[in-house]
Length: 59
Image 1 (cartoon, rainbow, N blue to C red):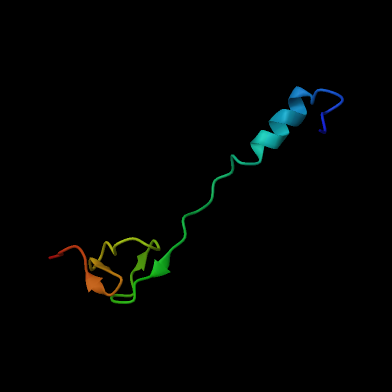
Image 2 (spheres, rainbow, N blue to C red):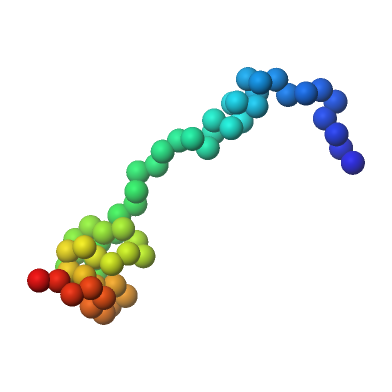
């Protein structure tokens, strides 16, 4: 079994962990009913439709 010969330095370990700390902007798709921007796989906040049917009643 492979075992590291030397211990990784603190800076190298921190550099490796730091790669996962970046932020990404949320993705948006247009609603097929009202063409308002919404997040994918979520109910449209404008019209209340999801997957082609009324999921949440809106006024």
